[in-house]
Amino acid sequence: EALFKQKGATPFVWRNCIKRSFLEKTDVVFDETILFGEDLIFQLCLFPQANSIAFIADKLYNYRWYREGSLMQTTGKDFEKKYQQHIKMVKIIVRYWKQKGYLQLYGADFFEWLIKFLIVDLCENDFDCKRDYAKETYEIIQDADLLKYKRRLGTKEKVTFMFFMRLVH
Image 1: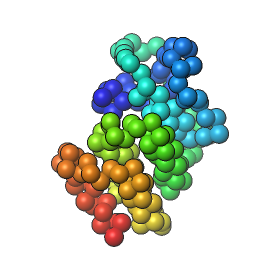
Image 2: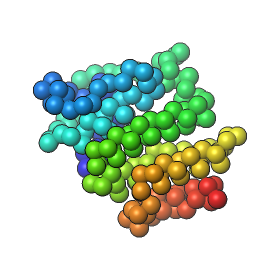
Image 3: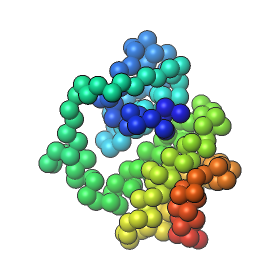
Image 4: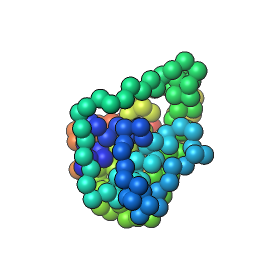
């Protein structure tokens, strides 16, 4: 629940304080070959393994994530490039979650998150390969066996998913 529902779970690694002993018990490492979204992958692979997670309201760090010339700033402006990176990230996470059995445990929450993370952006933006990306996203959903959680979606997510399915077909 903390991973998908807590406001403090925003996937920026600088927001986390993780015990070294916990990291050593997991097989999660920070993949430095991923230049965009490595925080999200790290957190989504690490959090399900934690016995407890605590959030504090204190603001201990000021992070400027849209600094002129930064990767976030340049990639954020190119929606198609950003979507390609998001698909790549989700594929890595799905592969890991399937291997660990997390999709069976948290599949409904993951499906809802995926709709908010990938599909809303796809439905709300126009670019040349939109239908191709919709089909690729649908393949991810099928590969992760998430369609069985369709009935558990909230109204907003159901509407978004219906619109998305029109893009796919």
